[in-house]
Every structure is written in C-alpha cells, then in structure tokens.
Image (cartoon, rainbow, N blue to C red; front, side, top):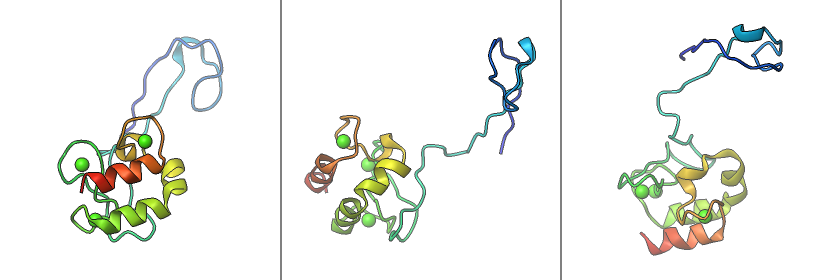
Length: 110
Ligand SMILES: [Ca+2]
Ligand SMILES: [Ca+2]
Ligand SMILES: [Ca+2]
C-alpha cells in the first residue's frame, strides 16, 4: 500500500474526512502494484492471465492457458464479471460492455 497525500484546491467537501480544509484538503489514494490485474474468479483455479500480453485476459480461469473452459467460465460469470472485474481486462471486443459478444470473441480467438 502506498499513501499519496497532497494538497488540492477543492472548494467542496472533497477530502477523505469529508471536510473542506480550503487549499489543504488531504487526499489518500490506495495504489496497488498491479491494479489492472483482475482478481481470481469464482470457480477459477488461479489468477486470470493475459497469455499473449494484448491486455485481454483470455485465461479466465487462471489454469495457465486459454482454453474452452475459459469460455464456459466467462459465460457462466458474465453478470459477475460485468460488476466485479475491470472492464478493460474482459471487454475483448472493446465495445465498452461485458456481454455475450465477448464470449464469442474469446471462442473465435482461442
Ligand atoms: Ca490476451
Ligand atoms: Ca484457462
Ligand atoms: Ca464487450
């Protein structure tokens, strides 16, 4: 964890304490080393992986490779992924949504 504290010029109740300290508002930001790496999915065996480093996490179940089981898991978890996972990791077709088109994209790109 890293704490980044600094001054802001906000005029509203914008700091972490919800108080306006004028130009001395303190912001605390939680930075994670691999913020873009999505967490393990329910039913997965490990951390999801981007097997070809294109930014799309095609090894959905984290078993080491992109395979048919990833398609099945993605399909079963569409609603979960849409709410809980970073969009950029699973929005394979880049339309800004997690949807069935991403399942078919994954199937076509195995
Ligand atoms: Ca990939
Ligand atoms: Ca896999
Ligand atoms: Ca999509």
